[in-house]
Length: 357
Image (cartoon, rainbow, N blue to C red; front, top):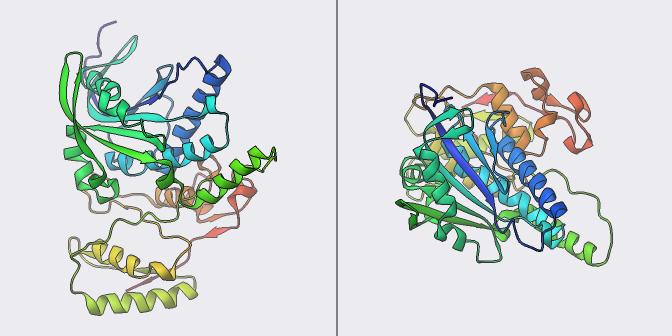
């Protein structure tokens, strides 16, 4: 069978396990590594709000190729997925045998791909695989504290990373990739175990101590996101009256279990004001501050549905994606045991009423 008549555009994610073929790993170790790699990927995608469809992934033995549909914002792949992966792998590595510890190289690119009888192919895929094999990407994992080495193509950096503060563009450094017939510029970032742990650090220390003492601990709760705010604007100025009103109303509304909404026409700075106010109020809400982009005025993007927005929030606070009810009513109130859930879901999560400014 020849190439399909029409190429399709996809975001390309390639994940590869470092030293998968290490002689110290037995077949059983390799199978355990593969199982954990897939589980970490599935959960990381789900917590980032990206569905893991059956046709997305193509197994590569010591890694996986994932082709993400164009309707998924590419910024999610760089701002959320790598961090979730690093969190999960840091916890996994602290609680398993040395031969089953996982450190990943992850490459991000995008472009046209074809499908034939053997799978996916195309120039864009070739370039993505050159990224994952590049010496600068491999060298990024020389630091034993590194968990994920993320390398993105120059196109991905220019079109996605540098436009999204949540992707932390300042953490990337430019490298030159020269592999086989490919020569190009790329950008690399390293995610370390320490920066990925946040609230899970205490559990890791306890798990390590318990393992040394041969004590069996209960498995940890589902990973949760505590703070996902975009960085504050350093040059924020003005809006003093609005800021004072927001902080006053938010404190009062929080005590009553209500939401506060900022209303106004597109482009006047509502998001910047809300993020700045959230940073100002951070000490008032030490448990959790979450940011989601509703895509209300993003060119070329459909607004996020209430169901999808609630799914993103609920998975962030620890509800496993597979336990989420399918419709809006079920996601508005989630109780332990509903829709196949378990006590890991915790108490009911009720979406409060809104109070607009």
